[in-house]
Image: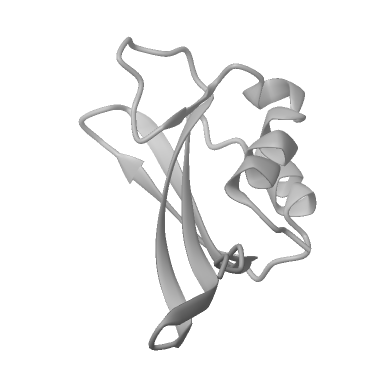
Length: 114
């Protein structure tokens, strides 16, 4: 089970096609296809004075032309212990496909010291 954003990134970067081709939100320089960008948000849950769990909503955008179905399947395999929603569309202005992968996982927060 995925336990952190760092674990997600390690799994994705273990794929040869994505090594050094993943960035948070965007790249500052143009990239050769395929490449990926990710974002994430967190919601906390728990008692009023103690938030025991954060839920991480992770979004990955894969850019490729043509659409890279084998790489998409490798991403799904690398993250096979979470439920993933994915969608793909062609971006005419950029002349590439964008495939998004979205999933959520719990992250146990550190217990506050008394």
